[in-house]
Image (cartoon, rainbow, N blue to C red; front, side):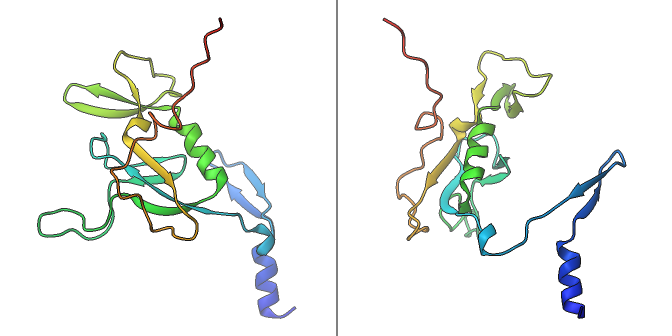
Length: 168
């Protein structure tokens, strides 16, 4: 084998990863190539102005208030949020994680809490973080054509948890 082939074979060989407890884990990765590509779609996402946080990661995806340079008035010159390419799996993970994140008022401060935490207990006034985030799927052929209207929150729209219909 030449040096390049040897390096490629070494890169594709199973990896051993040391965990915190010192146990070894065998990791096998698929070969890279066109067959491993996953379809991605453009999404415009971010945090709304009244969000308790400027930026937050939900389901492994970063929601930001704004990106880019600021003008002399300390305002961002780019449109709010950001456009990112996401897989269907990432979108599903975001939807799942939004069901666990809530905002709670602590005096004059608001904080994001995880309902899965063993210390979380519901309190009157808790609300889903989704009320402070927006998330729009964009046209694949024109991903930078964001809506020109003010972004609407995720919850209160299509992702609002459905209540069962009352039986008659």
